Amino acid sequence: MRDSDKPKESKVEGFKKQSNHLRGTIAESLELDTTHFEEADVQLLKFHGSYQQDDRDLRRDLKAEGKEKAYSFMIRAAIPGGILTADQYLALDELADDFAGGALRVTTRQGIQFHGILKGNLKKHIAAMNKRLITTLSACGDVQRNVMACPAPLKDPAHQTIRKLAVDIAKALQPSSGAYHEIWLDGEKHLSTQDEEPFYGDQYLPRKFKTGITHAGDNSIDVYSYDCGLIAILDGTKILGYNVVVGGGMGMTHKKADTFARIASPLGFIEPDCVLETVRTVAAIFRDHGNREDRRHARLKYLIEAWGMDRFREEFKSRVAFELSDWKPIDVPAYHDYIGKNPQDDGKFFYGVFVENGRIRDTDDAKLKTALAEIVSNHHAGVVLTPNQNALLTDLDESAIGPIEETLRKHNVAYTDTLSNARRLSMACPALPTCGLAITEAERVMPSFIDRIETELAQLDLQDEPITIRMTGCPNGCARPYTADIAFVGRAADAYHVFVGGDRSGTRLADLYAADVSADHVVDVLRPLLASWSKHRKSGQGLGDFYQQQAGRKTPRQTVTGAEEPTKDLVQLEVRL
Image 1 (cartoon, one colour):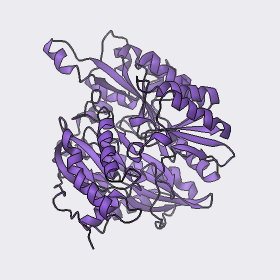
Image 2: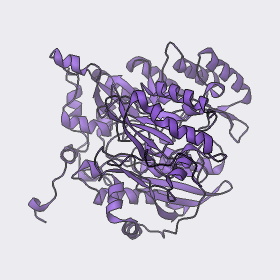
Image 3: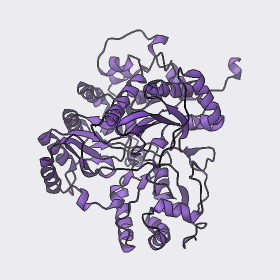
Image 4: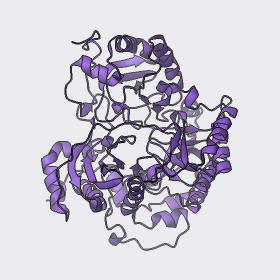
């Protein structure tokens, strides 16, 4: 093919190709007395675990005054399975005080983010994290991102294997370039060669690649929302092998019917020793055939939709040295948030602490950051970050549970006895003021949305019903809104698309129920549906299941596009016989 006939690659592809394997001019820019990086380095920084941002609350006034934006940086830690030692957690807590305004944030993918880092503190912050064996490498960027794992810190062989595999998968697909150590850890500089990245090459992947591993009884990680998901099939505590799903993803673009969220499709079943080869092969197919021209269509899900699963499966089989078996039938998986006291299977216990929207900080109302640091320090508790943005305190004696709950009460931190199900199962992305993609608010307004929904649920005697409620400030889906019972997705300033009909098991997507709803009217829009659910639901029937019944849908929805028609006026709210 002549160069003139080749599809034109996106600008970001050019930045990667010319970056000298992720070096760019980052090191040189760090030496300059400036507040921000230039465009190419901004893209490369993502691979190193950092996003350049600015305070959007100040943007308009600063522009009017002829001043530059209030630049800062988000730093994200890649923590496979969300597992931290007590010392690691306390080090992160201290770094939040030193560089991030006294706050740290649990992500929806079991990582930690720090916001508000100034450019002059970037290197010190990242170096300090690495001293505690916490890396930021590949927490962002067009590579495999943080590897998710079932958060339950149980000690049986199956859970231990799942946790170990999360670490092994992360290592297997971590970039090999020496750029990270050269720039952030003052490592010895090496001449970059093509062999420096034997898997990724000089352009890395077309977009991000997300992997998660769990078992058939627990879908706390939303395994069907990832590019590659592994579901362990158990015989007691023995792993027989893994069902593999591919092509999940939550992002879409408003008004674009050719963009969509997608539930991952079954690829097949693999033996226990084939996990690393499987993930590498799925990523390699994506690397070789993914779209590098249009980043809106560059995720693996678009390749699979274009090819179809039969072609993708045949390509996979042609590349691996083992036999791919047929998918093993499994029951609909359960969802667990592990809030409160839980047995750990070794005589110890773990305790789940609710972290509203993942933000760990002290406020006038509650001293969550202080409480967690006290508990971790006093009880030398390990910490597991969960996909629902909470924190599990691990390896506890049963005698520690009472003092832990007393510490939470002392600092006015919500725990099991004071949490509604609506709040307990809610989550939101950061959105404004730091995220450059946010259309409207999410984290800052979600608590007030939950307040209003709690009131409505109580009036309908639904306060004890489990219900997942999620919010994002844009349609990119970082808080996995499209698998929730109810989701609010930012559409315009103070306006949201309202989605209804997902489920806690994460096996289907929601419908666009109502479009462009003002923040003040979201509860009004939901009230008739909630009232009908209260009156007509079957025993144990969740809101999402009830909605799907009333909509008459027999087959779980696998995709939802950016150009859906609202269903609110089409769904029968009296009982469907």
